[in-house]
Length: 398
Image (cartoon, rainbow, N blue to C red; front, side, top):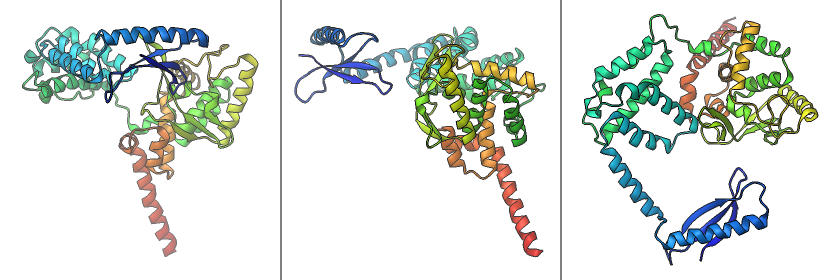
């Protein structure tokens, strides 16, 4: 007899857990049936009972696999897929399915685009064993000649490396051709942005905030909050009023709004998968209160930043478009949301904040990421520490 139990996901979605016993000492067969929005309790329970009966019948007919059987089936499918020979067959049958198990939708869409647009049209029909280092090098050189930025060329290189490294490790090829392919270097005419230029100085940030005072309240709040908290673009778009603790002056980052052409706007977890609490200053908190009061007069929404005239959350690409227009209007070069995130971290480190705390505040997976991204800030801190010692010696001598 199948049993049902009403449960709820972390984000509040209700579902019935359906279980069918496999006998004493064995894990039961399980499935879920989600309660559709707008359905009454009676209707949902009746439909859940139907789903449970159908699932129980499928189990009795051997149509449902237990976990061990599922693992065996997956292993068999992977073994079959590993026998595929062309680059396209391997990329589509082994590489992408393996990566998609851990990828976010945004990463999956990016990898899919690089494969379909740049890699498979050139290498897809070749056998894995026939792809030479020279063929891959030519692909990368042609890509750069087409005018793509250095960072984009490096991304292409990394994906190619991932494909052929996986093929080498599972014995689909006896030699990884990428071992003889150099990582793309910048074109002579391409200016690589120094880490220092990815962040504003204190004076530059002050000017940005001053200019923001002339903008609509929603964008003024967004800019101030981005600079104050160092949060990602999608994390701010996903911020809800319930995430703000007015008494302690903190915001809790629980979710992230992303967009891809195939999926549209979707909600996911923060980049490292962890919820974090970020403190904000009283000026930013006061601006948020103004925004909430103003929003209440036009529409009621759970989202802090909404599309104009609606209760829908701000599209995650809207800040980038707005920041570009803002930069052009006020003569601020290379102004984009991520630059405020860099700025928040850089100013914190150069003014004495420890890297571990900055890393936690930014939501980095580990401090190594922070150290790599803000090494210029650490260098500045080191110089300041040296100057502090020299100043102390001068005072003592004096």
